[in-house]
Amino acid sequence: MRLRRLRAEDTERVREFVRRLSARSRLERFFAPIAELSPAQLARLASGPGVKLAAFDERGEIVALAEYACDGAAHAEVALAVADEWQGKGLGRRMLAHLIRHAGRAGIARLEGVTRAGNAAMRRLAGGLGFALRRDADPRLVRFERPPTR
Image (cartoon, rainbow, N blue to C red; front, side, top):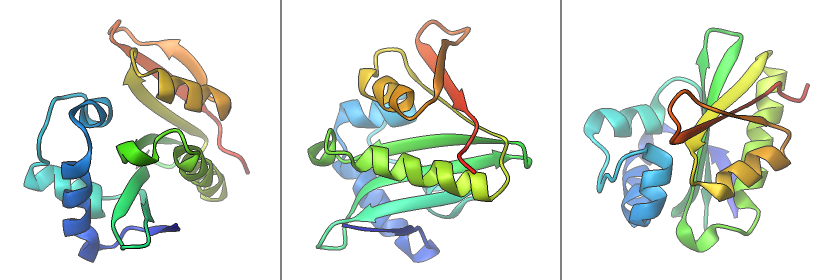
């Protein structure tokens, strides 16, 4: 397993990663039953602003993506997707912990995210990494936030 930041030339690998996700995993990550990313979504995910981290397997395929996008210097929103066959093996925890440390070094004051209320795995992961969970105004969503580790 190799972790590194995404580069512009990884665009096709990102597209294939999202295609390989199950319908449930795409719904949990993108909040919609998408089959494929639009060109704008792909560009933002592959090389948009913020920090984008990918995990690559021995074949060079992306098996997980984690990112944060900054809202100024004070806040960053995190997002994570892990290939179905890699879920529950600690990869998401490792990647999110890396982003937490990176955000702390970058001087970000607060990390936050949102997940579907039914996404128990993400709620457990966020809670286990010290994120405070709270209901959103939309009852289908749960918000999580924490200061990064400095």
